[in-house]
Length: 216
Ligand code: AMP
Image 1 (cartoon, rainbow, N blue to C red):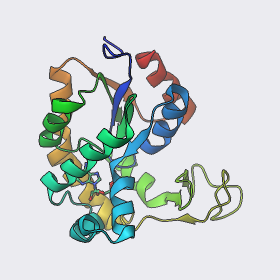
Image 2: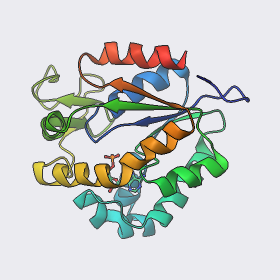
Image 3: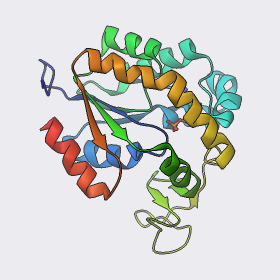
Image 4: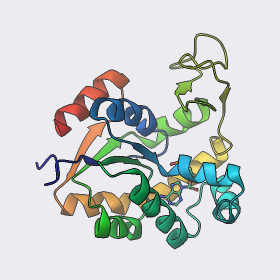
């Protein structure tokens, strides 16, 4: 498999259902390969928090785990990539639809797509137990990887919160949206010969090693 684009920049798309561990792996991979971590969810949550026009338009969709005004969001994320990624990127949560994958290819064609595969029954458990640091975005799980002190981030001492869309009801909707809208993106990258699948089950360090072997 071709690992890097001709310009030597690593352009990586990390795919997988919500709760598959994309955020955790993204942080480790970005540190190793010195590329920016572009989480479309984080970019959009920041828009909502800032009360921007885009934020106001998308808040209700995000609360329900839905995709919302796809063209507007696609344009916002691609212009974010334009500004912040002169030397490669890791995309997490984007592209989420085939339309987004096509638009991304026009300007920033990825060279590797990694799919973290996790069964549906495991996902609900992971999402509902997830706690995220509101400061540095580190991710914990109340049962499988709890912080040393309850509700306090081990890395930066920030407060751990449950994302408003990490409830059982919204999680079910997010999985449905993933299956309907995002699964076709897997075939999109498969047909371009750049997709590799890695099991998202087990120890995060082992999963990281498996992904690193694919990227090299
Ligand atoms: P995430 O943090 O990736 O789980 O995303 C949280 C929410 O942000 C999703 O449920 C969507 O409402 C919205 N979102 C994130 N990325 C995208 C995207 N690429 N396109 C549309 N909506 C998105």
